[in-house]
Length: 256
Ligand SMILES: Nc1ncnc2c1ncn2[C@@H]1O[C@H](COP(=O)(O)OP(=O)(O)OP(=O)(O)O)[C@@H](O)[C@H]1O
Ligand SMILES: [Mg+2]
Image (cartoon, rainbow, N blue to C red; front, side, top):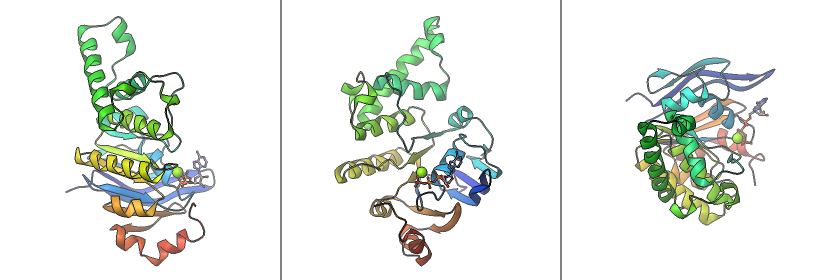
């Protein structure tokens, strides 16, 4: 079966810096695909490029049979990619429900003005989105009680769950998570790992950036290792993590 997402020769330059160099990446449908590598290796840049936040300098980017390189962030979201951010981005005054509805509007294009002046159809769509938001709050382990809380007042771990729920509101085919476990304690890490498994069980493919190798080994079906923007290794987790070149790349550079 063809991969859900494939890059060929993907290259990103920031001035004189080649942040990503001729990267070939293939993400299989239904996989939890780990993207790992030392700090500054280019992981977030890959994710930013796949989701349209950064334009590739060269290379091809195919998602579900469609060339998406150079499309806008919104067009890529509509094609079925949704993401979370390394640094949580929730807006100051919004409730959890409002934050989730923003996620849905981005994908389905229902406009708030359409609601105010709006048709019965727009109102029905909004009702369906609100119902979906409640379902997803349960799914990510928060529950409907959180809907009217101001998102930024929640604990860090709960904000992460809100971000994941917001991304899922877009009904993505591919969910891209940039270090969703960073800053969490051992229990929270296990819970988020379980949530990632549950997402995959729903038929959503996952690209996961993560530094905790124990979690990566337990969670991922396939790993790609980046080092200085280049693909250093690619394959099954056990083989990749025991590769001397991968271990050497991490020596002295891994986050504590
Ligand atoms: N917008 C930008 N403009 C210029 N340089 C950038 C930009 N974004 C990233 N870089 C540089 O590109 C390289 C890769 O950065 P990136 O954030 O992708 O690494 P990373 O693998 O996600 O690292 P970390 O594990 O610390 O999150 C770094 O040298 C970084 O300084
Ligand atoms: Mg990063």
